[in-house]
Amino acid sequence: MGNVVIDVMLKPEILDPQGQAVNGALPRLGFGQFTDVRQGKRFVLTVDGEVTDEVLAAARQAAEKLLSNPVIEDVVSVRAQDAEGTAK
Amino acid sequence: MKIGVVTFPGSLDDRDAARAVRAVGGEPVSLWHGDTDLKGVDAVILPGGFSYGDYLRCGAIARFAPVMGEIIDRARGGLPVLGICNGFQVLTESHLLPGALIRNDHRKFNCVDTRLRVENAQTAWTSDYEQGQEITIVLKNGEGGFVADERTLDALEGEGRVVFRYVAPEGGRNPNGSYRDIAGISNDRGNVVGLMPHPEHCVEEGYGPSTDGLGFFTSVLKQVVSA
Image (cartoon, rainbow over all chains, first blue to last red; front, side, top):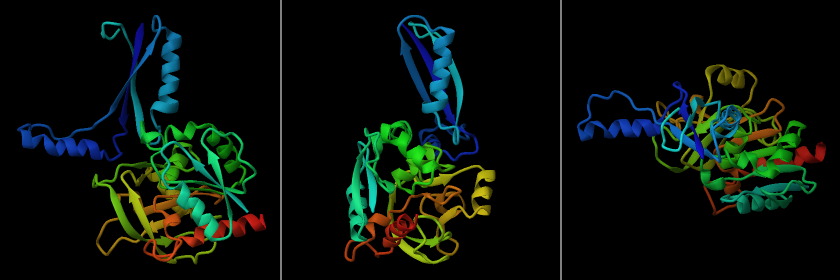
């Protein structure tokens, strides 16, 4: 069994109200050193067997077609991960 | 005149949309998200709600429902399609309309009467309004901030495809942080219109701030008769 890990972030020019909410809470907890927060999404897609190049290619397509909206989001990484969770 | 109203899992306002169609003398036809046949309808409404729980992104999963394949094809061929609130989100996810709807900039759910200016009274869904007319329609959303890049916004304005704008109070702000106060837009042909406010809730005295929503439904009936 293998996993493909996909990270999606809002484009830098798109307002991120969720990130702003988190950014507003951090100083109240004493974390005053952080000047901005952007919140993204991580998807972990599981396959039987190894993560082959074909699997990665299909994951990239899924990321573009469904997992992200190219109008407002960027797919920042698509990568294989083995069963122990270590990035390959 | 048959107007299809799609029900996705999680749609909320399909009944009100059907009721609005009936109020102006049209025949509403229920379309199920799993259908691939549009049952001979002359126009389609994608209603408000939280299709598929709004998981992933609002409208992102509904956009791939079986019924949407046929609607997207027919919309490209000129079928009048109106997306209200969640329906607008489905239309942007389908790329029938540009831009996207993101969480309100103030991060709160809105439920307010909104003043809108009709910026284009020539679409399939707005021909019964006057250019520049102001109407009052209810708005209820958590993710209604319209965003697009500058080039797209300029093109929408230049081509007259901004159909509705929020009339923000003097020095005030629009209800959800929409860029350039945009409340609704159309495709270049004017048959596909999406907006966040809810005209279907404003068609009967005593059930909302006005009956200003009626014009959407009378407009499309005329459009269908003349087509």
